[in-house]
Length: 499
Image (cartoon, rainbow, N blue to C red; front, top):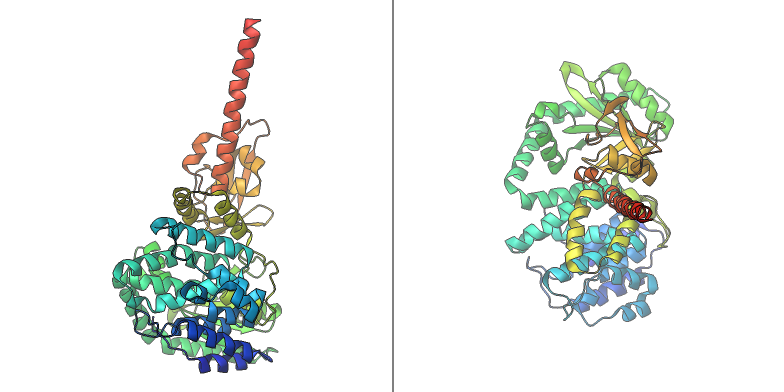
């Protein structure tokens, strides 16, 4: 990643361009306070410390978030690094800005927490803050992206720790929130440090493919623009999208290195005015080029659980070339790039609830229940599988979408429907075919759970293949109750025998 040094003038220009009637006086005051608090401090990259909060604030302004969030971005390190207090910030900028800064402020170096305990406590604090105010997530992402951009200044062991944490925790959170732009940047930034040779190999592959296919894709874009120009659509955009490097790396692993099986190295996006025009554009593409069987996906009629909507199709173009198209409205495009952050763009900085964050609230509840550093670190490993792992989307026979981690089984699906469905589960049908309960599910599967109302409870052996924390907890709870009930019956039988 190439580091870009921002100045206050850059930030002010962007804010004036992006916002209607922004409070420039407060923005300038925040910069002056941060500049004074960090005066004379230099980062390991050799740049002044103020360059970091400026970069974070600039990124938040690019997202069009409320100016309070942008101001909090400028101030996010002052409490941690200087004598400025949260009370000082409250008096100068109001409670909202002070609360945001407090939420992202790490623990001060004190007596209570050291080493791994300190790390665990900071992670726990972050999860709790994210669940109470989703804007904290946007600030943490902007902060982490600039840290990845400047990771070259850190020692090797810290590079690896920050990169791994970015890949295993931050990027999946971005994915769960539908923030594909952030997810891709976090993954690629971490990938460069965790597997530098593979990163360079993916970069070389993409450089070669862009050179080889660039001119051809440009011709296809011209043809699509002419096609749309013959219709009633007036406000449309057609542009290319190059696959991210870590995404390419994962796909190549999936296909045992066979590059010919990856059709979306360079995809084409079509952005139109409304849903009707989306389907019209899909029809035009299929009239001109033959679609690849099984590669048409309608995420407009059936959105992904994180809110993502688009039509996807892959077609055979001239000379047998295969091209993937993604068709969406501008609103869908903003949701695809920014996820839940799109709901906050240009809006007042309220603490209103945002959909699709129930899992964050559950995650915060887990942290409240955990008391020790050991418990937390163990739970963090579970969460990397349950909450942060790549997600799959499977369907009930009624068409409802169930969001599960990759590798989940019909047992996880059953407990996601309802605890009693899980406890009474006896068999499953996947795509109308009877399958074992330990069968790994795939995105797009239609799953039906067969239950027996007379079943006493789950089989403890299900713990060997249940993936989600929810399913495992419910199985353990029900198993304990069953064992207690069995003991009670044995004791009752003995009492009767004595009589």
